View 1 (spheres, helix red, strand yellow):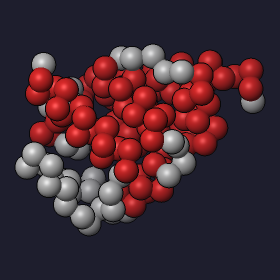
View 2: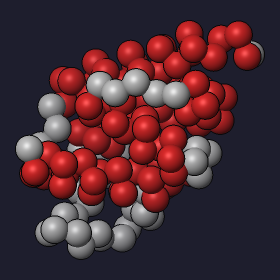
View 3: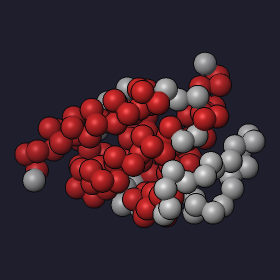
Length: 125
């Protein structure tokens, strides 16, 4: 459990800041793997600037730990970050094998989180 919490902390820190693609992060021997496609990390960096750190952490926890998100963070996800940016998140999470995330889980959970948020904030469109 401690390993999961440590890995989650690392992932939340990475997703919150989404360091430039060419940089290597030296946190507990953690390195950013090669990009799944050219420009992927640059796109993720732009996406991360569209949402607050608090809500970025909430999105990651919702995807990885099945936690619920506040209406405020759902609003930021849907209206500021958007679907395209959110669809890149499972790819980003799954590309880090040292995190030990279940790729199948994040690819199923990612759309569920987004769709749930759409329903939560649909009255505010």
